[in-house]
Length: 94
Ligand SMILES: [Zn+2]
Image (cartoon, rainbow, N blue to C red):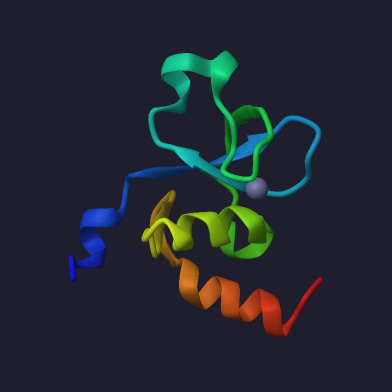
């Protein structure tokens, strides 16, 4: 099993057009902004680095990332454990 540290920086937290909250997409999404989609399938609007994914994150994006084997995302200064995030969301839905 690869260490979690290697998996940071693969995804970015972003805002989506027409959707609330913070979503996830590939870190290099801004190389092709028009084609960029969040992991839950919505157009990417802008970086959301100042907003904590733990507070406003999208459960579907977290589930997609976790299903692809990515269990940690960087969120500005801190790392977010997606497995824990998903467990918390499922046990305390908004
Ligand atoms: Zn999403």
